[in-house]
Length: 348
Ligand SMILES: Nc1ncnc2c1ncn2[C@@H]1O[C@H](COP(=O)(O)OP(=O)(O)OP(=O)(O)O)[C@@H](O)[C@H]1O
Image (cartoon, rainbow, N blue to C red; front, side, top):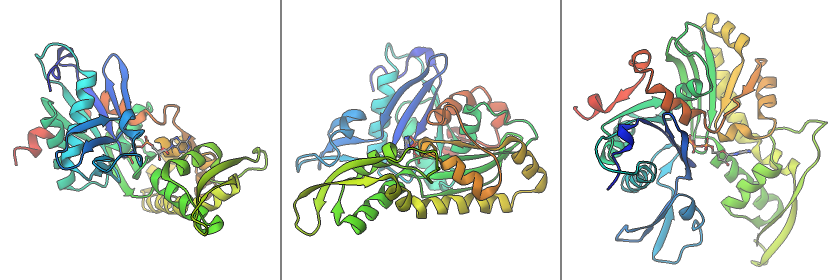
């Protein structure tokens, strides 16, 4: 905790994600981007590594050390480990003498419960913040992508992270209508593992599946797309021995059909129940995609075809939530009804 409260009380925004944590400091931009992984000694919970170093240990630790993701589906699965991880990340960005504690704005999926929200606020305050605020991820993504959220004009944001996909219609500084699906990048990886197992009798790991998704994956294939293949290594489920096979982009498209359809149905469901005036604005402005999962090739085209509404991927898709959390600290007056604050949550 030493050196935690510095930078002249500089306020910070955090995208506390299932896959990664991004920290934004006003005037400096994104200062930290690390996988949300922590490695601890079993039993004592003594921290061995955090972030990128702990990520390299996933699936490779000796018996007495566990490398774990303390967040699952965008919410806290292990409170103690989340708090330890946050403290270490905050200590990395806030160095120097201890004199003024920061205000911290954290982006959370719009579907998290009261109890989960309280747990995040508590963890941030325990980690050294003077005040903690929570903002729904799609609202933060919209601010981070440069949408003027305070106007009486409707915007639709679909934020696809690792653990959750948040779909929201925003107007006048708040969320008019939203849903949060626990189907996103991680579920895409699991669908790839299942598909390769069923089709090729080959068991592959999560990191291999993620690699395939990023290198040769797509939501659909267009005639102009170059056809891609990749070599993958895994365990042959029949012989039990290591095996290398070649997988094609079409395999990944097939594998992703089911989880992608769930997201498309989620977007359609929100559009079907959005008031007509706002629908008209959304058609004018297009649906904004953000989050690492939205970088899946041709996902924008798939969603556009399915809804008939133009779709744009935010230029800063991966950073939009983190940037938005930082900027939201300058917009407390506009956002007051949309935020959860530690002043309220911890008093109860
Ligand atoms: N080029 C890419 N193509 C497809 N998927 C990608 C690409 N780059 C990153 N991803 C996926 O994006 C996901 C992580 O996105 P992001 O960092 O926005 O999530 P997060 O904020 O940590 O998660 P959440 O908001 O659900 O808590 C991972 O599943 C990762 O595999």
